[in-house]
Image 1 (tube, rainbow, N blue to C red):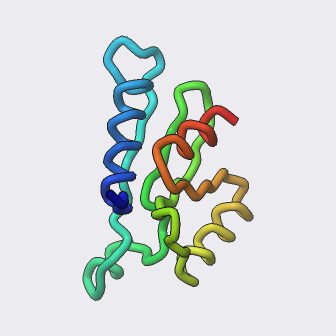
Image 2: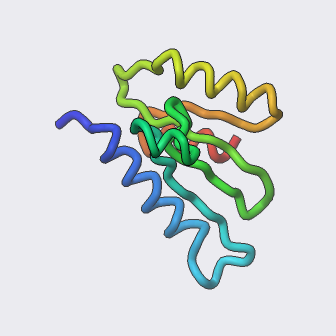
Amino acid sequence: MEMTEAKIQQDIVKYYNNTYCLAHHSPRGLIMSIPNEGKGELIRTGLLPGASDLIVFLPFGGIFFVEVKTPTGKQSDKQKDFEARIKKLGYEYILVRSLEDFKEQLEV
């Protein structure tokens, strides 16, 4: 069964919340999804096409932006532009293709 981007993202959010964001974790991490598709009013109120799928706030310091793709998925030009802008601002940006990929990059 091929994994969809949505399923991979759900697995990542569940893992991160259960590993770093429970009430007994101190400090608690934070993970959030970013709606990044839409038109008109959504764009005028701040939606940014190409923005990463997730932003992760690490309990041990740091913030990184996560783009989720299937093993064969490719970034759009807007996603590549967002990645470049994030990196120029000094933040971490990672592209992951599975929960295991996310876990490995989180530990680096």
